[in-house]
Length: 211
Length: 211
DNA sequence: TAGATTGTTAATCGATTAACAATC
DNA sequence: TAGATTGTTAATCGATTAACAATC
Image 1 (cartoon, rainbow over the protein chains, first blue to last red):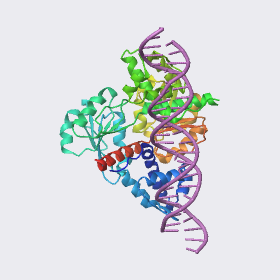
Image 2: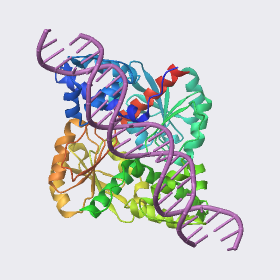
Image 3: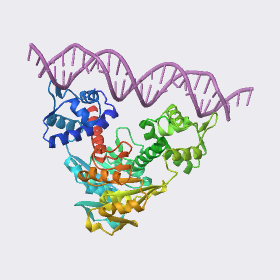
Image 4: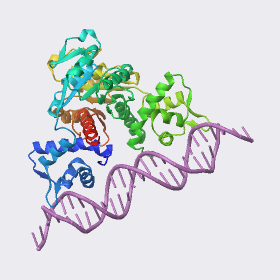
């Protein structure tokens, strides 16, 4: 029905969104692809191509209205509606996510934390209650959950993901260091911190060899 | 001197490394690109091309020795030497990183946390002391620091990065939601959690429109 | 030696950049 | 109307896949 847009383009959209937000804060009303290009250090051509995947948001001879473009990209990214998130694994990382207030400004609301550690039962983080894993079914039955963030050790992640999908959750933000094998209608976004660190390390070492 | 390898290839290397580690744990001694291909769901051709950027690690008619290849990729990624990391910003995320033991197994050792919050002065996380920011110069003078992780609010990140670079640190693991403008010999690896969440959100919304 | 599988070259595919007609 | 800048097509570049000779 609708042509698929490459992940390369999708990865760039949040960055456009961020720069446009900063332009709004700076009181800039309109911007040309050329001007944005020099700020963002990507080609103007790429900006126009990327945006035109989703529609014509500009105007010849004028450029783009910053506020309008910002809002349109927001809609494209699904930021115009609320996403309820549960965080499964209330360890350091899970709690860090729960404490991160900025997500809420974009419509991502963490509504519950889950863990197996009885010592955490009944506690809460920034007003978000930590539940025990056996309350999961009950919780999902009574609350809409759009996304589950997986922040438990990788040994538990696969089984946990299966259980979440079983309960009807179809979007996973996966921090566990493994590739989840899930039905293809389940959307998975991986954050592999170890991989990121290794890429950094590679670039350090290869610079050393180069210079 | 040495041909540059595309970031697309670099991004895949940690994943190869992970799968090979799992194969070792499973007691597998040798593997063909074809077999690895079906496990990892990438083409055998891509595996061979990727590896041959760095050298010929296989043997015709045999395939690849798992342990040997694992170690070679480890060397390529710089995992054969220790990387000392300081974490600047000892909030939830910074502490979560400090608590993450797995990094140490790969040679990434967090040697210090830094913050401006006096309430944290003298405390420590998993035996890693939290220092105040005014001790930074002193610390860097007396300890080798290979990487600085930036986990403070984005408003402070640019100035802080400049200060770190000034002190001779030339690799930044940036969790702050902005693009750092640093000399080009400084290696920066970004982890933009908000961007990741927006990509997930896009994929949720676009699936909804598609189905 | 025969079979298997790599390393590497050639072909294809997709993404980025350049160019320019359309149009505000 | 003239100038500016988009939307879009065409050209280029790079990355992925296919094919196969080399060789263990």
